[in-house]
Amino acid sequence: MLIRLDKLLADAGYGTRSQVRGYIKKKCVTVDGQPAQGPEQKVDITSVSVEVNGQPVFYETESYYILNKPSGILSASRDGREKTVVDLIPEPKRRDLFPVGRLDRDTVGLLLITNDGRLSNRLLAPGKHVEKTYRAIVAGELPENLTEIFAEGIDIGDDALTASSGVNVLEAVEREEYLTCCTENGISAPAEVEEGEALHRVEVVLTEGRYHEIKRMFEALGCRVVFLERTAMAGLTLPADLARGQARKMTKEELIKNLGI
Image 1 (tube, rainbow, N blue to C red):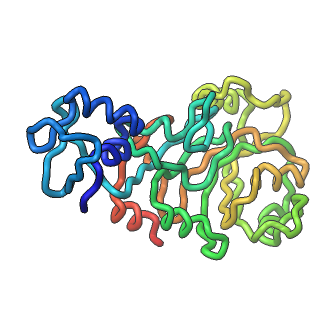
Image 2: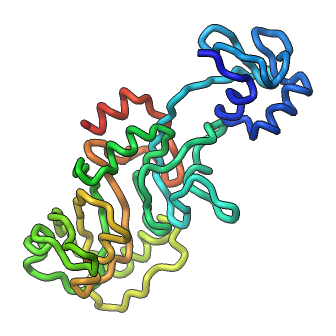
């Protein structure tokens, strides 16, 4: 596949078209050991060696990363003022990366970053009903029939009830344990939780992705979600050894196998 040299370098994460043209002009770029002829030079990355400042350029048409999103980061491709999840991907990276779906600013956990629009649509299309699993800490008294309520759907103010969801109450949580959880996850402004207020850790499985859906579901029941983490998407789970804020590159085959779709 022939591709313009400036596009190849820009797509591979070496800067804007203007910036990579500057590298080429300064003779920082070589093709098979020879200085590049110019930004318009067409190369076949499968048969030639391209280097920038002596370092080989690795080009791929599709890229996949699993990210353990920290709190306080925007789920967006780019933002003029704030850091985004794409900024957490190690350099060099393609310019066309985007998050598959969104996690709220204060929600942590599993997020996929890619430039594969087909895979993203496959995971997010409403008709696919791809399961997403979350762990939450909820403040307030939970209804005894919580499981039935989630299974039947909840009125959160939209045109229709939420889709049938799974929920499991895992354990009671002490206030100090909750505050420690916030500290460990870099949450500088924990939700106000009074002494003696009931706190429970719950697991929720959704098959849709409405705005602030889990938070609104519990709010409709008179409770508050004070911590939220996504732990799985389909069959892909958050690796135990992937620290908050860290990303790991995956192959498409590896990702599809783990997702189970």
